[in-house]
Image (cartoon, rainbow, N blue to C red; front, side, top):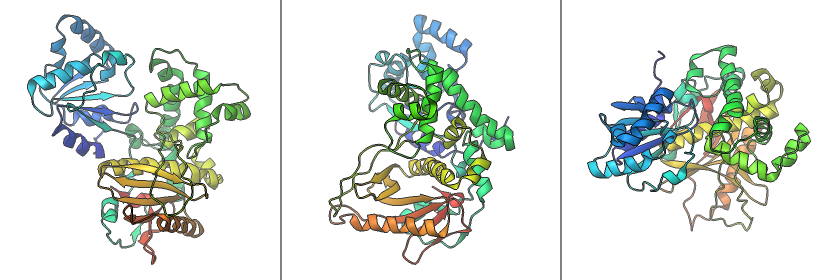
Length: 422
């Protein structure tokens, strides 16, 4: 059995359980939800095991409350297999009148939503899990704390532990926990296998609609070609690049299904108060929950990325967004993007619940790109109407390649992804 690598979600789960009767941990398959939940659970009902599920369905008809009996916190794994459990747990939480009673895990939205009659408001908390960030998997040395930067801390130059080849490999490998224990081609195989399972198997199990594996494959390829953009005409992209015809309605249906599987996780737009009259674009930016799904969909290898630095930079942005989302979860916040009619963009706006926010440009590396990123950040910061909202807590260029993390004379942080932690 592999050693457990601590997750940021560990503390989030403990915190939620201290104030809620039940907590739902949700995210894509194989991201570590069950393993994380087992670190705190005292008993378990594993509905991911077909024999246990069959017995549970029988018990549901005879003595349903027996499914909830066990030492708390009780883990209900893959709870969406029996959607009726949602309301049963809500009622049990009310009856017990205590916090920290149940942990539910789920890798898809339940098929029969009508069987979940109550929202669970006040009884349930939520924890979203994603594949591992580089700090969780052990590739980032964690010498630069995002929390400290939010608090205005200075950073001494910190050495970047990762080079271009290593970043390319980690990007294509992805952050699936079991993959982090593997090496070389065997580790890379896991991303390809994951991608194939999504379009060959999972897409048929997400709800009651029978969908085409081939159309799902085409859509995933199109999404991968347009990752980190607000591109919306995917049916035309599939026709142009794959010589196939898929309607807009079909694209929308398949995208919704993949979001229910937590495979796609788009980034919403940020809408600040500006001095400028530039119109803010409100469309979401497209991302996979892990960039390795995109590289697997297009059969891109680490060597391919190194040979095409423009493409490398695009998918590096996706990996950086994955890590920033994990880190900002730990700080209780969200990640947005900014784009306006003047062409000014910001790759990631890290917005905390207390109102503080930081602006981040993501660049693979190079002094010229760092300079462009810093200039864009300063231009956006100068547009913000600080009479109506707070000024940004920090400006950061997050890079892949570069010898050190440091702070420029103009105050902009330059931080390699291999140095960052929450």
